[in-house]
Length: 174
Image 1 (cartoon, rainbow, N blue to C red):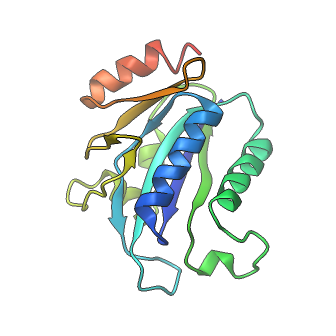
Image 2: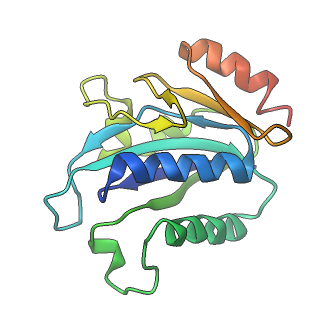
């Protein structure tokens, strides 16, 4: 199953988004990460700016099992999942399944209308610098590959069409 995951943070967001992406690549292997952008808090009373993005990963886990894993990562990065007010407070990491589908497609981009999601794809949005290891993400989408045998990560950061071709040969075949 292909899962579309929203990722956000407004507590040390550059560090927490990078850490979440790193953990996700170690856990699930390859993933496709869309641009990271600064957004204003919505439904959260805060003066802290968010970094939001969207990523796609492939997993054999059921949605409920994947959500448990996402919650584990949030907790690992400092989110208190037991706080009943956690949805309206600042957060170090917020990972949510926002779409799932059995085959690769970007149809969800037109179906999801939340402002923070749409800002990820808005060329006028301010890009957020995120660094994974020694590689700095650019403003373009990135396919991230984790080679478990060597413990190496690398970012394939190219034009979107090239990334889709890479997905078809790498992520989609795994």
